[in-house]
Amino acid sequence: MGKTKNTEQAGKTSETTRRHAMRRLTAGTSPSLVAKVYGVHRSTVYNWIKRYKAGELEGLKDRPITGRPRKLGISDEMAVFRAITRKDPLHYNLEAALWTVDTVRDCIRQKFSIEVSKVLVGRLFKKLGLSAPAPLKRIYRLNPRRIERWQSEEFPTIVKLARQEKATVYFTYVTEVKSDWLRENESRPHQGLLMMSAITGKGSIRFLLLKGKKPTSDRFLKFLERLIHGANRPMWLIVDGHEYQRSHHVLNFVASTRGRLKLIFLPLYRPGYD
Image 1 (cartoon, rainbow, N blue to C red):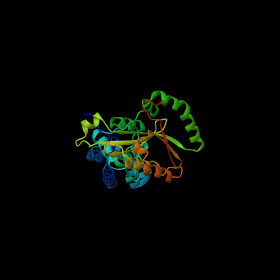
Image 2: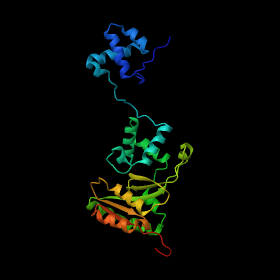
Image 3: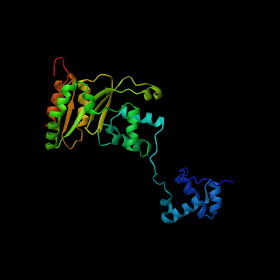
Image 4: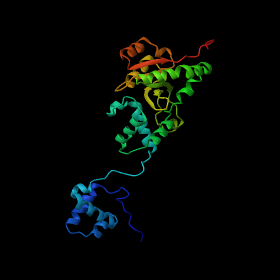
């Protein structure tokens, strides 16, 4: 006969099972019989006895799962997608108002009681179509010659001034969420989803997901409000300069922050402009 599987090591025994087993043991049932009744190895029963002697009933409580972080299944990944598209982090009592790698990790920990790595969350973002290109690489396509000059002459000055003001510089990126994986696995495809994000030069991203396909000043304003929520330092946001970003109520809101938020408009491509 093969060896009996140590089911506690496999995470298949519950605290209730261990308590019931200890009642039998303290009543005089032999460890061998208890092991047979509960389908575990005798070494597992002796481990329960050791834990009970060390802390009585407290010693029989479930222990935190350790080791390599568990991966998410397809149904789990869809649950995460629905969680971050339907609500913002504040709904889940998280400190930030925009989604980041860390807030999504916190949401997964809260929803599934497991730890996942930053690398796994980054891969999930790509799978769900929630990744963004490198900021300077993306804006270079607007007008290569003009942006190249802006990058070499104006951007270093912006970075220098931001350091003096202890501000964080972000680039905006607005796009419709598209993902082949989502189309294959979502039973009820979403009717357009817009991703508004702020990205640092090092690639750290904060984003908000909104229903719809077209950016508007109202949606952009909502994004800005979430962006500065709880911020402990000024934020300088480099934007493309589209009309919805220049609307009166957006500019009025920026002015009302009294320096907490600053918009820096990129030199957009215009025919004959260089």
